[in-house]
Length: 445
Image (cartoon, rainbow, N blue to C red):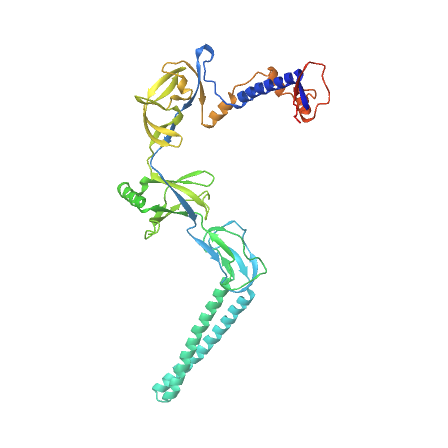
């Protein structure tokens, strides 16, 4: 049984397709594989990337998560009942202590004050009459013209009148206090929030919150430290003084505020579950960047800074004699022996062997030796390294025929690749005049 034939032209098309795929794969590999040219450049120079050293403060600092809280905060709660007549503040504004914020209807409380005043005047009048009668009976009693019972009655009436005056005065004071409570004033200075009650609403005494005021300057940051760190800090403060401690606050947006403790106190006991103790630090907040309720990072360390040179770890090499780096000076690579310290991020402290003006090789280190002439490109920061890799990738000239074919904006409908795809999906119904190789499969019956 004959299933199909494969012509020389089709074999040629398939071979051409395989070659094009191989060349395209080579081209794409060159396009997508980043490689910084490290080989010899013009004049036998070796291309390298260099970076300067960073001068940073490496003094010991401890970082903690702090919670910002207001030192003073007040919920405005009415002391009298009535309808809210006026709201005299702008929500979210800063209010001064003593500012009138709400006014509750005053007519009823004004009338009560007048009533208490009238009662006081009546009590005073009764007191005058009772006092005169008492004095009269006292004289008659001395002259034996009045009985003892009459004198006792006059004295009792006088004392009751005197007490009535005191009671009327107290009632008047209470009425005036209630009248004063109809004007709700700011007890502290700070920022006021949303008005929880507006004009026309009825409020009950001590039953609901009208608004909230928080003090923001000064402000407090609370954080917890371990018992060991607390003892070490306490000993350091005793030896060097409170002013020897410096603190930095890192805001959620990354901004750093350098601020010293205005005052500080610790909790009176250590939490036995976590072995930590709470510390409350007070700070100035003139710019109002510390917002109550927010979380910040607080770093505490010695006031005196300790500056050191930091070298990128990619610039450090090692041999049987120890650690070294390659420094570029006047386009000549020079080997420097270094003494290293602690690791900080992607960099390492250099104790000796380098200066702040040195430029070290961070890429191409394996291509150079002491005295090699190089062509150096200076990288200012780590982000430029990746950009440099991309910009220096191996390129194929635009005039290359394979590049032109891959970058062609139009598709040739007569392309042998497309035609091959079509013929592969359909059975062949035509024969060619060219010589063919027949593939015959006979099925034995």
